[in-house]
Image (cartoon, rainbow, N blue to C red; front, side, top):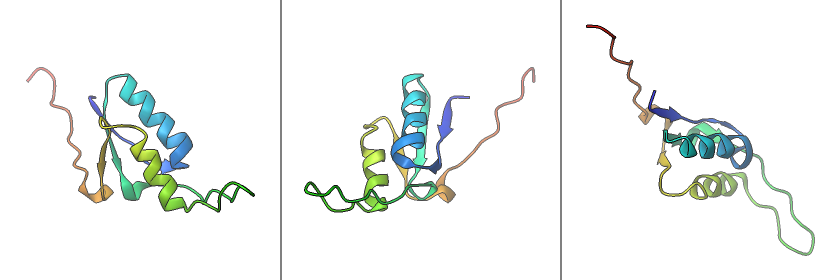
Length: 87
């Protein structure tokens, strides 16, 4: 296995942490934009208004840097079976 496709809930926490660890371990990481999500971040009184979930998810992708491959749709990810051994 050389590549991982990461999806899930809580883009800025679980999804981002999993992707970051996989990148650090040398895996190719693909993150379909439509296959991870989160909740709106509530307003911080006196600091900012609420942050929409879509913005939080996009920032989670961006913060992982240029090694992350972001594709628009999970349907665009191609999976391949490993080559059989010994033959």
